[in-house]
Image: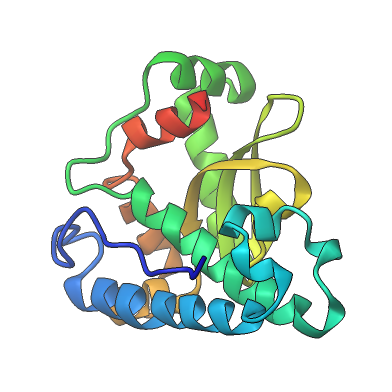
Length: 200
């Protein structure tokens, strides 16, 4: 199957003032689309061409050497961004509830403690990368960060919340003020979607 750029469930300007329309348009239609095209090119004509993006990324060591880097970098870019768009909502923000909230409180002590740990991961990721809330193989919540387009899928962890901290995600509005972007993110998190992923 060919990978395709997913449609957004909201308009490019829907997340303003937290993320501006120009950043969203450039990020989605240019950056993400480039990952999709390059991921397709990397696996074209190989047995990997028929795999879903998750199937491609869960066993990176099995990908042949000659296409591994391109497949992981661009496949990861596609997978990470596809999840990121789902995390965002113009009616987001607030705090999680239900089973997810119980798990967060149990693991981190409180939502505020979790928020601080996740924000710190996002703010301190050196260079380009991502902050994550994942479910580990033993069903424990964990905050982590990855470089470039690496994904927790490749190390057996299920991502349920992510924040893109590549400069292209925020530079048009926030310039070098990554902490301001991280704080704005909490106003547009779709906790319903995060809980849905947590329960799967």
